[in-house]
Image (cartoon, rainbow, N blue to C red; front, side, top):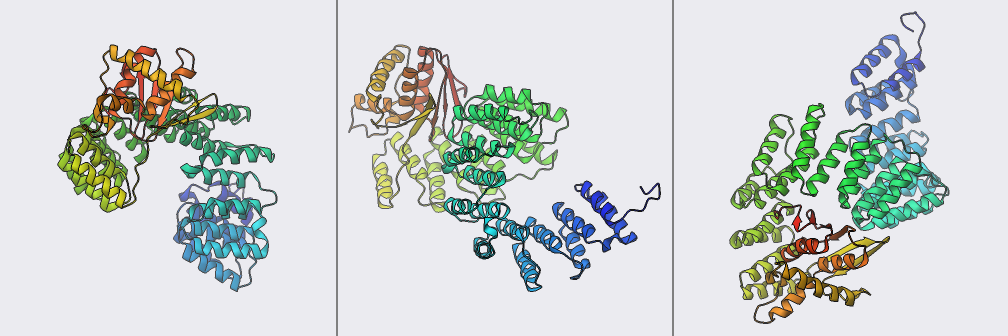
Length: 590
């Protein structure tokens, strides 16, 4: 247009600014052109500049444009755009100041203004101002608007409200749109305890006539990952295909990779990855994390090297996955090398999670003194994860004195956490220090602290079966006990020797027979026995456990996989153990 000397106007420039929304250099050039040619007298030009300066993190430039407009030029869009810019920079106080000025000047507050303010309050985790704005929106009737409603739902979820509050907001919207439903599903999926509600919300969304989109599937698949429900995940995968979500929609495929990995189906995760027409960094991070969780360090490192070859730049999350893979496979020097590469080659400053991975790497390898020094010298205040990792390794390597130090640090950080008490009591049991065991257990009773019971579950025929140690509530418990009695005899003939240390009872109070019975009643053994009884020969079994698998169960599973000719996968609190033909994928390094 300019080469042909065709006159442009403000609307032309506004359109070009919108087209160049992510190109900061072009935005600045267009801003200069607007000022030089007088296009900055157009409200639409200034509003476009305001919006995209804000979205690109240039708050000062946005403020300069807003101030230069003056009160007589600004319209509602100008005010809303500036409020959004403050919200994106987590400056709720400035957003509130603008809002009050806007009301004082008599400018109409519409649904975009309220939604923008809610974004600002949510970004700074401010529930009190959010409540006031909710009250104002009720007085003006804007709370029934889907745009405002989705902001209120998100605000209550992120700012210390409850999902009950969010649900009340949903009920007051006469015709919620897909954005509102997606916001509800997203809020439920962020809370591990509410994953089932997220899937129920998806069903409600479908019943209301709305089709799920890529955002819906990503959040719902995240809930399936949390629930470790592969059957539901497969149904969602099929639904995504039927819904005509394009096969190159990276967001959904990335969620599928994470879901299959966390549900123990690493082969399916790799199939999804291989069939993707294109990958982004999240795709690579997801599959590398999956390999790390399953103890396949070599595959994880191979993928990283392939990623570097195609010039894809790793992120801090990439290195968390790599360091985790090295920790699970005992590759100490390799882990150190990647930690140093992250800093020196890629310029990524290590965060608390990276240090936690290095502490885990050193602790598992028995380098406990070095792990302790790293905890004491890292540029972060040591948290629960660091000391808990060291404490767990102390039990594995029998370092009683260091375990007491780590446990005391944990108790100072969180006195009501049962982990340090339980680990100390177990270690005192290992060393036969029964008076110390009694002292720790009395301390737990006096402080009202209860040990989290071992719980294992598996999904069979679209139903989840839950087992707790010493619990006889399952309708097939007699058959399970009988089967375990028979199986233990079989694996004993194959060389299995029960490790009575994990019975966790005082030696002179209980005979060996009673200890063995208690070992047989551990939740993961009950779940595996039920799976073997209830599935056809050769069918794989996947069991989830809320705690770390015990040493005796780990040993027994290897023999059971050999005798039954089954592939048995157990996902405990730390990682996956895949037992097949008498071996475990962890190589007994866990």
